[in-house]
Length: 145
Image (spheres, rainbow, N blue to C red):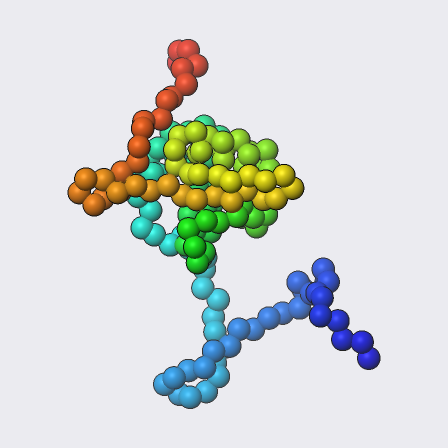
C-alpha cells in the first residue's frame, strides 16, 4: 500500500471536522467554524484615502488588511485566495496595488515570477492616532453630470 503525502484536487471534497479539547468537560468536542473577519483596528484615514481611489483598490485594501490580521509579521503576500474571496481579477489587483502604492497606503516589493510582498503603511500622528502622509490627487475627468 502506497501512502502519499501529497493531496490531490479530489481531497477538497473530503468532509473535515475540527475538534478541540474542552477544558471544562475534559472531552474532545466538535469545533464550529467561525465566519471570516478582518482584524482591526483599521485606521479610518487609511480607509478614506483608499475609498477615493478608482477601481478595486478599496476591495484590495480590505483584502490586504484581512491578510495582515492573519500574518505574524508586517508584510503579506498577495494570494490567489484573497483575489478570489474579494472578486478581484489579476489585472484589477495589479492596477489597485499600483494605486494604493502611489497614494502612500502600501509599500510593495516585486520580484520576477514571485507574488508581490505588501506592507501596509500606517503612520502615527502627533497625538498617537493614525495619520497618513500626503493627500491623494484625484484625477479630473471633466464635468460628468
